Length: 195
Image 1 (cartoon, rainbow, N blue to C red):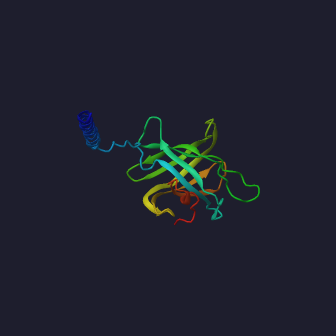
Image 2: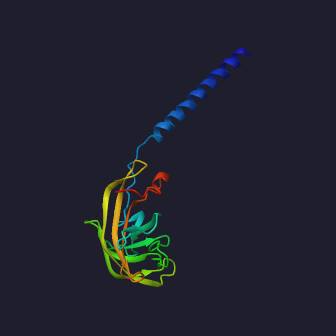
Image 3: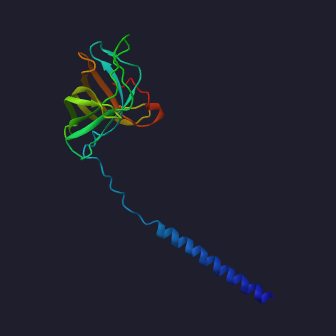
């Protein structure tokens, strides 16, 4: 009985060693390093992205609202490197004055120049964001992106976007859109005092 017990312990020890060897072998095999996956960017990157913007009425030199708005810039369906879409996700007011006309939403295909990080449009259709019905025509001037130029409350350095816009919906008024690439950090979502 004692001999069988010793033999059983010896077999148990061999089995335990074999299991440990397999675990160590598997961990060494799983430590194989792979290169980082190649990231494919849009042909208009870094002009493309999601932005938080504030809107100033340059006629009165006042913010049209204390709110920040979300704006998207993204590539066209044919992946053009000279055109992009610009779109808001909510209605934009024209001002806080009584009787003012709301600027509405913005969705327009505009020209862009990736090497100079600039964009513009002259009398292009402003489309309804869901139906694509023409709402007005807009002109965008002085559109530019400045990389790593805004220090956010979260400590991240973000990109800046700015452009001027006129619309046939609010004749005689020029709006200045200024903002930063969205970080999605909670403390950055309502940041409005950037310079």
